[in-house]
Image (tube, rainbow, N blue to C red; front, side, top):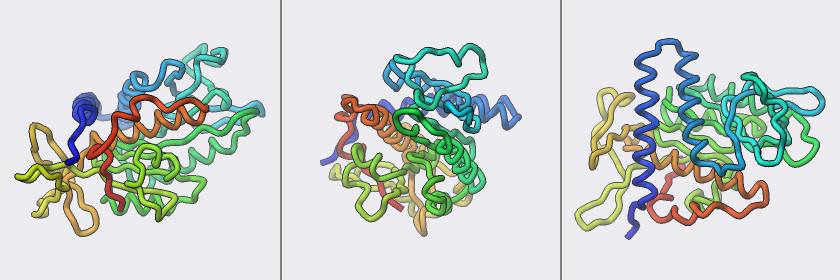
Length: 291
């Protein structure tokens, strides 16, 4: 029988803390720009505690030696162990592309326009020319879905390959995905073999009377599903529409798997051993459903 791991239970608490920060700030601040910045800072604080100490987490523009530069980047993960910080002497930080390992676009609400804009930012990053090494990976994290899961999935798949985020997570509806080569080391056969680009959902784990795991299916369509949630074992979970089904999503697991894939790729892209934390994800924790 697949059991829910201690790591998954821990991350349920992490997500509740992260969401509480965002919710409180969003109630106090009505200016959308400030709301977006707080969402970036909340995720940045999480990543600072997550990634190995040789990496720094910042925000700014990525540049190359030809004086070309990317668009403003919400979160930049860079190698701070081996490079001087001569371009980080003010609040307007410039990151040499050779030193950057990953860029993350953060959006408060996820819809077609925001996804399209993220593709433009990825393109601006890949126009730069590193003198050594490879381009940083480009990821996308959204908090609240502005459309159905199927619609968001279509927008992502319809992007040109050069515009697609390498990894993505839409936290509030439990959506995760990206390039299969980056997901497979963590998720294994759960992503299937049918596509190079994966869009998947993390549904709530429930137990029947025999203790066997079931997917969290919601049998009666809610009157206002955009805000509908259910309580289960002390947690609050969103109801999402996927195809013709109403499902109960598990956002904390989507965020956990996104972060696990992110940290794994940081290590392997530098030729280092995968983090030990990869060995603590198994069984039900890795259970995703592609859409």
